[in-house]
Amino acid sequence: MSQEAARKPPSEQKIEVGKPASGKLFQRVCRLILGMAAFCLTVFGIAGRIDWLGAWALAAFFFSYLAFVLVWGTRYAPDLLDERGAKAANIKAWDKIIMKIYSFLLILLFILASLDAGRFRWSHASAQWQISGGLVVVLAGGLIFWCFRANAFLSSRARIQDDRGHRVVRSGPYQYVRHPMYISLIILMPGVALLLGSWWALAPAGDDRGSVYHPDAARRPNAAG
Image (tube, one colour):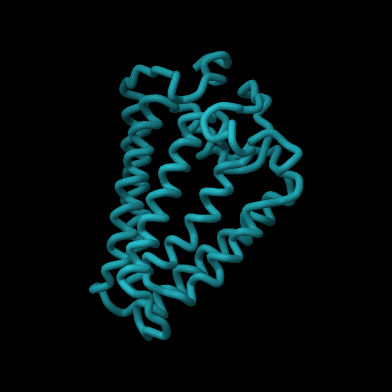
């Protein structure tokens, strides 16, 4: 795709999907299936049971949501998917540290939830709280997709994409807040903990608020969020 086309929001791009794109989609869907299988084996394995409705609901939502994003991205924003899946050299050192902290807290959230709501039942979130958590997860997913539609430079890491003609995005959710992707992650994690039915998992979910924000974020273009 030309640099001029890449600068357009994905919602304004129209890409013809040929065999190469279809091949990439197939590979990405296969990786998604393997990733979800590994996730389910790990979570239900730690929980020691498979009759965990909250975990099944979360897995079903994640799989269907990510599959939809992959299909949509292959059709309308292939460069964006390539950017998010590629390794880049010009990533800030602090971003690497933050991503490690975020990954650790995310793993801790699922381990705690599996041990709590899945195996030992240390705490109990009522069905109403779990439904509320599910609604928060859906809301966060909608906001994330809105970011995808508006921002052709929505990298998974904080970097200035000079190779793609990076510019500041001011449409979609970016007209209201500078980094809406960060906000979506901040509300997503507590929603996941509640949907899984674990109050204990709210601890690492709350700590995620600090890991997805850095003071430099307020002074740089919307590179990752």
